[in-house]
Image (cartoon, rainbow, N blue to C red; front, side, top):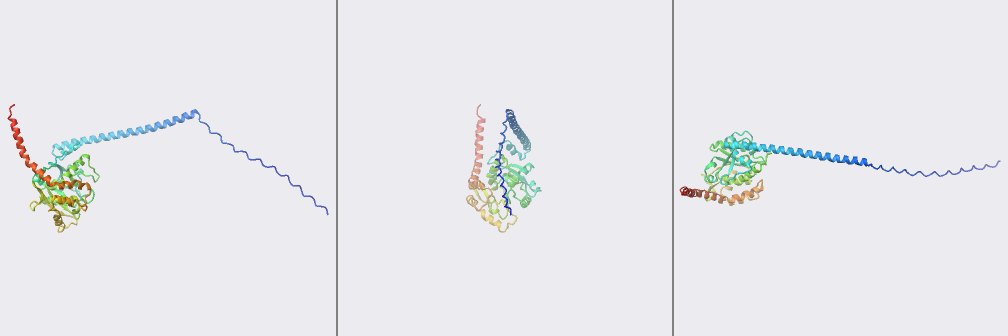
Length: 367
């Protein structure tokens, strides 16, 4: 056999592949030219100038709007003042409004003024309940009257024709939600034709409720009236509109106590049956056989100090806690206050005689 052929020679090794080329570096950023920088600066300045112009325009418009509003308000005030002055010449309640618009609140503690509804305005009221004071004032339904406190303490003068209403507010800003209180007032007026005027706090004092607010002058007048209100409850005819919670409230208890008192030169004392000035009308769930005697027993024999201690009790509720701080000192001093007013009134005629004598001697003096 022939000898085997030799194996073929191995192929020569392939040469190594060349390394990959290095990455090409990014081209350097183009440097802005001086022209480009100038354009950017101009654009920035222009943007700032436009923004400043917009802000300035807004400020100018805002100032013009405020000036227009002030001018309109001033025009309205002058118009109100003119109408008030015109109405004051006709003897309406706006006599006091003139001073309020002019920036003054006139107040004499011995002859304070209050606002009242006429009996006709109450009897003719078509709404569910009496509106708030600001609405009645705008409708010219209020009368501003001055009360001589010395005359009132003697049971004389204007208070003999006035009905003051003592009642509980049934909800914040809503004293008479169903009109039951208004109907009780109307019934009382029909039964007492000699009563010509009605004072109901919600209708006769400026309110901060029901979408209305007191002006600065109304607030001052409100505070002055509130601090002197005991004088009126001590001397006027009072209709107590009593519900189940009447005996738990600060203001109603204070008003009812005043209604059960009478005034004299010695101060305040419990009124006799012949001196009685109050009527109690029960509404809602109040029981005339039980609640009325309870209220009378609770208040009718108390001295000013005793009733002040009772009113200070934490279980006697009040909406505004500051009312207790304001009124309790007034109640404690009521004896002294009544005596001082009546003593001054007694001294007045003697002083007038002295002044007449001095004046007479002056008229006959040689010139």
